[in-house]
Length: 203
Image 1 (cartoon, rainbow, N blue to C red):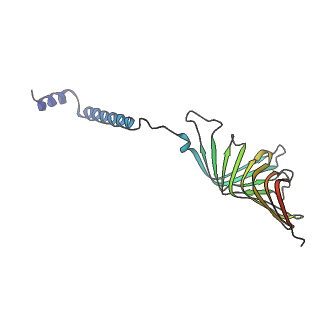
Image 2: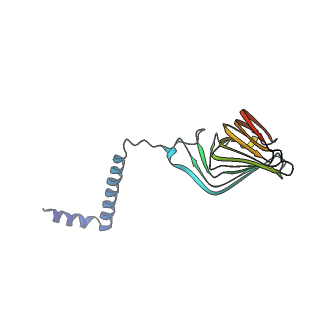
Image 3: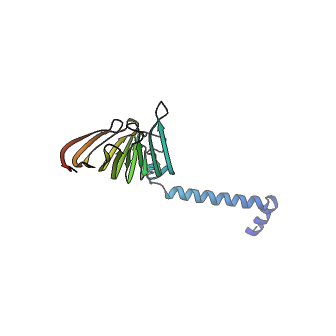
């Protein structure tokens, strides 16, 4: 019996749709097997792939009395999960052009903090701001106070910020340069750490 006769005999007992379905399953299995063979030895690094991202984000946190504590706005946040099994303390979120406001010191004159990029770590307890960081406050008595640095670590809930980098503080009274700063934004208290140089403008 030749191959054509065998095919005809099979066709008599098995409907054509079943044969087609069986053929597709075999092809799919072969393709899947080849794909698995191709990726053998590839080490999956979940930190290179975002777990999720959001656009046009605005978050606000209020105190126990219902007053605005601080807020954060950003065009986009991208969250990375380090371990594929689930969340961990090493997870982090990248923040694009973060714009933060802290209101405890004076709701009418909040401290405003901006940067080119940010990185939220430690389950959101710490935010690292990087590149062209600007901290400023405008009050009727002191005028505009503006501080610039290259890096700032912010604990948003405590309204506390710190850096070990060079800082430059400008106000109507002059300019101060220093290395390192601690800033209690809730109390409007700033402490410059070292190499403080001040230029006073008597105007």
